[in-house]
Length: 313
Ligand SMILES: O=C(O)CCC(=O)C(=O)O
Image (cartoon, rainbow, N blue to C red; front, side, top):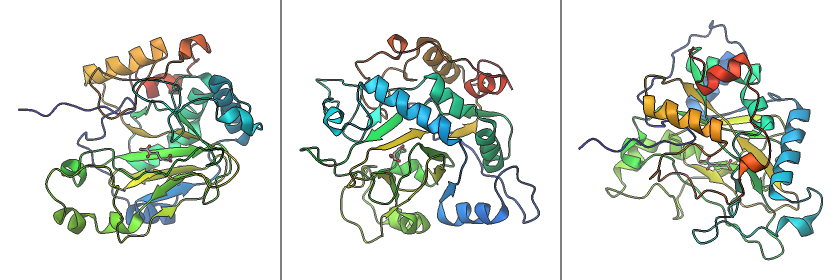
């Protein structure tokens, strides 16, 4: 039986893909050879100052507006109960906020320098953006207690064959301990032998203590942090007094020949909803708040239309 195709953020993480091979004299658009080497050796990379601070600030404002909270008023942050199956509020305990299509989100996706970074990473011009959400990860205080999580987004039996890039754009400065991305680079480097020791069918959630160091990746507003999908990763607890704001953002080779996926993407944009097919097991539950009640459909540039798929490459 062919396994069911799984989609995440409007893309297919397990699609058969290859990373390009470059030589030191390769002409990158944004990255350089040292970045490239670091990325391939360590499975993650921080790309500094990619998005102007004003665009980050705008999206923080939009996120707070959508959630009905005031950025500088801690009393207002904890009014939304974390999403559950019985109560599909627009935000999870980890801060995952069900907002996908606001103009401020698309402005970051269709920002040409972001596209140029992913052109460098994939070595092809024909890219699609992920259609992913934003995050407001609250400080653990006032009884709010988020312990963080670590996981992979693909099943472990598919992991070694997967070539995919995930990414998160920091909207505010994110020092270690402020609830940002956490990863395990040493496990990434020894993944094959570690997997050999795992029981068949083990979960892709990493809940037990392991011998590898878990690191936080500090970043500044406007930095994009990318990681290889084979990297165990997740959101860390916020032990500061300031919320962490971020937008999940990545790109991958376009798959217009995949009619079902293209339809999911176009419908998601047209209806201002999360990209999904019924039965998708990866994403969380939908928020109760509708994006279409919150703002008009985003205007796309020529690049944005191609990154969505409404305009072919
Ligand atoms: O909050 C983060 O930076 C990590 C998010 C994450 O685990 C994911 O996108 O799969």
